Length: 441
Image (cartoon, rainbow, N blue to C red; front, side, top):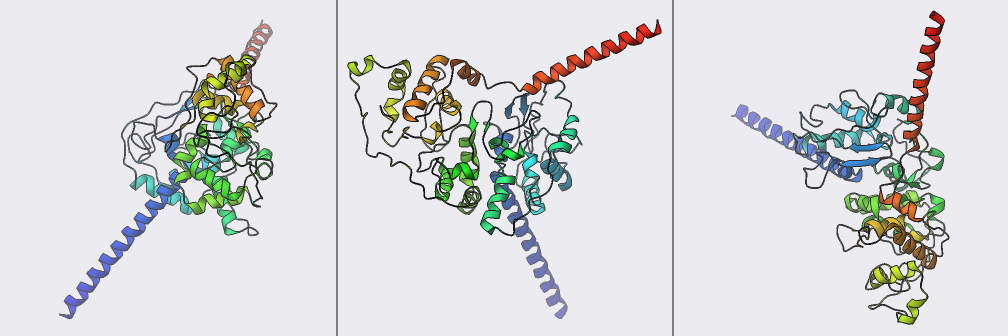
């Protein structure tokens, strides 16, 4: 009897242990799922209409189109054969399981700061919480010499900082959490930091704003946020949650996508931590009071008022005033343009891009794009009108620049330089051959 009793206790203990292990595994997987959301993995590795994380998303780069890989646990098309060490090497060092190099379109330069614990949680999620998909996406084929992936090893030696994040003991836990997220997991610098000729981030200009080819990622350094844009931590946290802030800021382009797919799905505590890091001293912002209650277009819309209008003003009245009002005060809850933060940037690209592509948040009605209705000159004219009359900005845009934005942005000078280098190398080889033959004769 005593023997049976002991056996029963052992069975119960084993069952409790197994249940505890399973619960721990599920908690780890759940944590990894949250980290994947915060890291915005789905934005690049999930294509609309396809299985999550099955890859194939086309990422436009100045050197050509890069297609994201399948990161499901498929053993034939994904990362199902990766060990945790191989997964960590891909995530933090840009080295695939087969030993070849990744392009820094995958932000391993930021993920390098992730802790071992977070890497383990992500590995558990992708291996156990994601359904395997045995579909191989289109492969990236950049032009020569950028198709030689081994060259990235030299790039990494010059530019990859592989040290994990180190908390600052002089700062609060909230500030350190924000620093870990901004510098690492949410990889803010990959968009908001300008890059050098070799496409590496300029660390001395961290978060000071950069062109993404079409959209412009604004300066989000402490000095900029505490300056004339009138930001507070509360505004920043609200902006990350909704894409809007009480100072009039409205997200568009890649930032709107990051909010919809990542920041809005993060915890309020993490959004507050990011705001605490980006704006350590919350200022006393006094944004212009928004005019409320406007339900119809305000202003003089008589034929006489139209007679002296320039092209930009006429296009605005025909296409924009029904939502933003004649004088840019906003209408029926839609954003005011008067002193809008987007009009206070070092260029007019974001205004032109919003007019071209529109702004369509996933969870609410947004602005339509006018790429099919307005030509380059018309978009330049209405952009300049809005920048000058509503934003009191001297920044203007040309029809030629609008055409470049419409086409996806400028090509990288690195492409031209590489071709010049190849031509120069060919000339040198020919000269050496000529010299060698002449010497033999």
